Picture 1 (cartoon, one colour):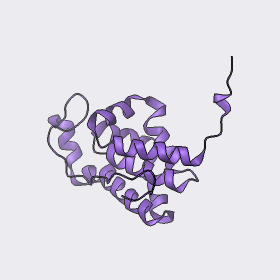
Picture 2: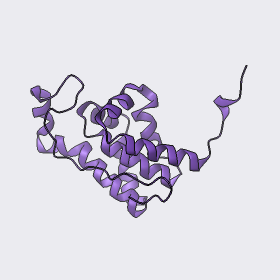
Picture 3: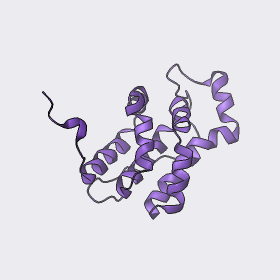
Picture 4: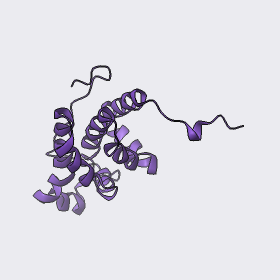
Length: 151
């Protein structure tokens, strides 16, 4: 029986709230690993939300990518999915909050590579999960209140 879920049009408010919840949840390393393990329904889906028309969902997706990018493997996956370009667009065209999240996400996506930290991590500073055994020099993302959109 087909309940029509494959062709459902999602309510933008629901998508924005769910993305905000994911932004908050990705502050936890275990959640980051779960999102990364979700395959195309994880990091690539968040990157597609960065490119979407819904401003609130894009802002929260940028915050989630900012959190995800603290982990080396998630950072690499986000880059492969086109997050740098999508965040660059949000940095130029987004709201103030969207620009702040986009800037933080870009710092986390590119900072370790530019500073040489990524090479050090790859040489043996990482656990099997891809997370760093020491605290990285990354920009933490502020959690968003799903009702108000404020940090």
